Length: 482
Image 1: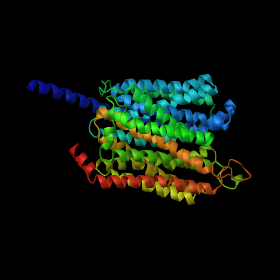
Image 2 (image 1 turned 90 degrees about the vertical axis):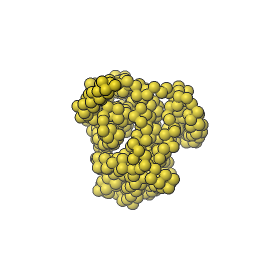
Image 3 (image 1 turned 120 degrees about the vertical axis):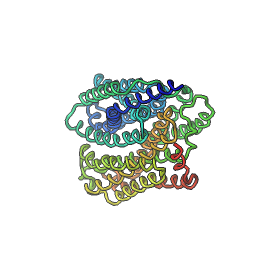
Image 4 (image 1 turned 60 degrees about the vertical axis):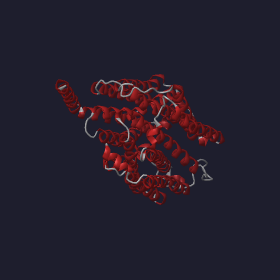
């Protein structure tokens, strides 16, 4: 028995030593993966005018590029994090890299509008790989692995947003469309090679299965919801029908999953302290960010000849949004530490309050460059703190064999929230146009747009208050038991 214990101790020491020696490289490749997958979501937007002229298509056709990416993301965020728990990390990293590389190469080589749509859908699907580091860092690092995994995700989000916004703006100015996609493909190849070189081989973390019917059902209702919100300004009443069908299908999916022997997501997790609140907050922070970016982009790129706007290009808007991205580095780590201390409600509420303050500021102060720098910094500080709490809470209430699932739930609702925020902004800005210039919103709609979006943080404060009242001290007690 002593010999067995000595062997186990020796094996455990060896594993710990290996994890310690690979800590730096693991964190580095995790940050690289998060950065490139998040950046791609922010790169294609500035390229839409270039795509229009290159393929000689209209505005509605060009926006299908982003819609295809959004729908691909819907399927990706459902499948990729969840599959990570039942397939080994390296296999998921390899297949995600292959999908992302194909998504870049198809439009680069094909150089046609249909190829661009297919490539965008694959890029959207593969971008869900940004959640994979949460799982493999938890499994391969010792000591505070949850804190490290969430911190890498949040901080790399800031890097990815900066790289995406600035990279997209620079691409419009200096690169051809095919060159941009070839560079993107090369970045994915390098990233995948680095991941396979560093991430250790491992067995699947979980022996659970995923029901095919439940997975198809979820992807279907998520796709309907996303499609309805993405095309609401184009299809009109048809989108409300699609949205209603998607919502009904989603509501029916929940009890079916609870009874399933092979659920896509273990919804029992949502009964744990603050887990449901974290998902609600993730949804609403996603709505805030998407709406905020659209409002800033539309206003700042409106030609000054119209009577308002700053007349900037895509790169200029990206630079105005830099504080939004850079403040993510400040609030993310501190927020995650506060959650570890058992105070998730405090950080979610603080993040919501900062977002609300930034949005109300911009509602009445959006005519000058410096006002955007202040407003974007406040919204960035708040949303990064909120995301840290939203992703850390589920990780802290589940074991590491469910790390992918615990990342996938808030990520999926965050993406749906982003589509909702974008749809709300589009509706508000479509309410009235300048009579002499059809399609250009009346300037007062931007004030109303920011005020409407400021309601979302109020929803986070309400959800947090309800959780604090229902489960006083429960999360802190759970942390004490861990």
